[in-house]
Image (cartoon, rainbow, N blue to C red; front, side, top):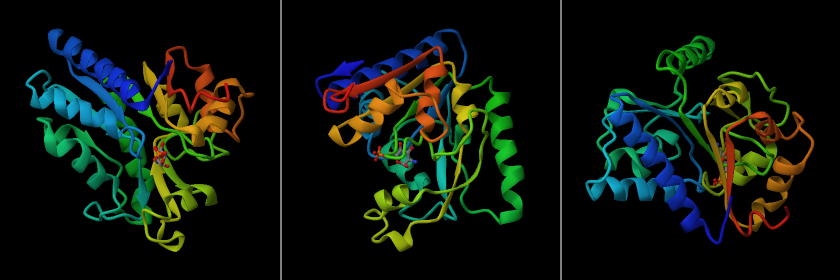
Length: 244
Ligand code: GLP
């Protein structure tokens, strides 16, 4: 789906999420959202906050699972995805704190495996993800599933690609400060969502979008696995779509 600009594209995604939440409310059910960080979804979150402030949308029946978190990472750090999500969404809406799940980057090495298994269990126990929103990294990663991630991979600790760490360097005031690892939902976890929306803005994403949409499905570009999903939209601005 190609929009003229990222603003209208973000509004359409926010509207789709709001409709899902309202539908679930009418049915007396919870809406389970898979959320992403990075610059791409920021405007979507702005619109959702706006809908809430206008009294048009409550998040009381919403459960969220974030895709990923750097490792190691203290939740209170300015670089944490916990902080990002609070700043852009959670501090401004009426979601129950117990319904928010973000991978914990502040664990001992020996705790990680069990923690990741539990994260998967929690998603299963609430009936799976209704909708997963995604950005895309220059390496073709989704979440932090770097090249080499398999189709069935689950939530786990991964080693970040050099390109990804370079892209994050300015946020961390230097590549040497970017954590070398992260905890991420797996490709398989993401593929389990009933609906997936991958968003990309700007010409810088056009090459990887072309590969993800039109390229051969392969582990070296994990986003190509989304071609296997039966209910996945790529929502793009015209610049990100310019190589298609
Ligand atoms: C990080 C996140 C991804 C995100 C990617 C792209 O690597 N873990 O989930 O999709 O950045 O970031 P941006 O949206 O800023 O281009």
